[in-house]
Amino acid sequence: MNLALWLERAAQVAGAHPALIQATEVVADYAGFHARAAGLAAGLRDRGVAPGDRVAIFAKNCPDYLVVLYGIWIAGAAAVPINAKLHAKEAAWILEDSGAKLAFVTEELGAALAEVSAVTRIVIDGAEARAMQAAGGMACTPREAGDLAWLFYTSGTTGRPKGVQITHAMIQATSLAYPLDVDAVRAEDAALYAAPMSHGAGLYAAIHVRQGAAHLAPASGGFDPGEVLDLAAAHGSVSMFLAPTMVRRLLDAAKARGTRGDGIRTIVYGGGPMYAADIIEAVDWFGPKFVQIYGQGECPMAITALSRADVADRSRPSWRQRLGSVGRAQSVVEVAIGGAQGVLPPGQIGEIMVKGAPVMRGYWRDEAATAKTLRDGWLMTGDMGSLDADGYLTLADRSKDVIISGGSNIYPREVEEVLLTHPGVREVSVVGRPSAEWGEEVVAFVVPAEGAAPARAALDAHCLEHIARFKRPKDYLFVEDLPKNNYGKVLKTELRARL
Image (tube, rainbow, N blue to C red; front, side, top):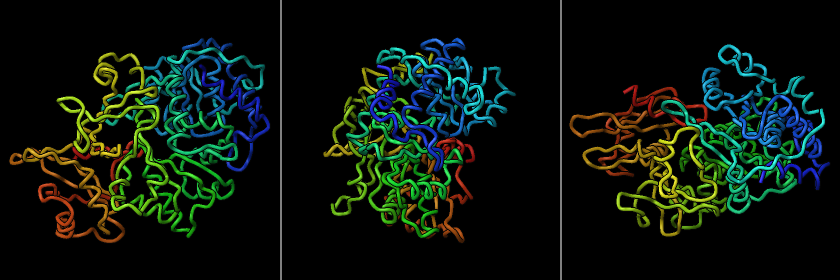
């Protein structure tokens, strides 16, 4: 089934309900949203876009982003959303690799792209795009469950990113799991797009379309903590997806203002490690508004979820351990832990494996990488973790990040969690450094809290109070900030290179 049918049905039953909002201005109801998307789809057909072709979107968040996305689907084509924070040369490589017929761009990004790519560009909110939307529309093109809907390029912390083939059925499965495992969606709610629509925030658009909720794009086209707080207060009943670094910035902004996040109904966080100290502080300030999800591009947003109740609960003796997990398997997947001898029992650390409807069909034009990642029906995530007896999954680290020192495995996240509870530490990232004696030794890159950097002896004593001596960092390197990619993930490869 074509995902765009959900938009058609929403227009039929709730056509007058606000659909697309720019800041505080309603720019389309659901009838108008559908009409504009169907008109754009017809315009794509007139320009030679056939079912199965790829059409890119290289744009900041805006209401027209969703019009274009659904127009692409109505035409039977596949979208290639490109993170607006990427360099034009990086975007040009994705356009070439995907074979995109054309690209919808915001004006500034399109100008930069023109210098490095010959692909046909249409300004997403320009005269040509608006003319396409205003023309007569077309019926939704039939699509099969396994047809490509979204070609998602991984963040690429090393080497070239890979194109993950996300099908219509995958997004449907992720969407239907959302109200079961993450959060209810009501017509009176609004999805606020502060994180890139080219990523997880955009994937969650489908369930909000299905439920007839509003879609709210900030005027800035991105994440500004003060703007998010203002929009939430103005609209009310707002939900959003944020990376952990964004949650931290939102919390800091709210504390500086003395506000408690009025109007925020739910913040779904994921896409990187949320340290226990940060989420405890966030819940204490904002209240029980948080749900954690764990997913990958290869199984988008749909591996596990830690419920609102679990995030906020402080009554269980083991609440800290549960809060340190990423929750239980979502309804549409199976999750297991794999080791050299097969599936491991509860409590043992191994590679996290997933199977189910949201798992990708493979990488774009990369059979070798597909064969390496999909084995016997399981997606091998490359993440290390363990399941407890109640089915809660706790991440250790990426398999490539595990430090082997003196024959013992050391998981950097465990050390990072401890260091973040020291008042003198703002951010930290732990990596391994080659050692002639130990093979590798633990090194911590530390961003100090405001004021002077804490004494190394104080950090040593803090670690020894909480973790085994062999896990304690052999060195602390103080830095002003940590290198991050466009999704806010720390680039540990760059930190290793500095060593």
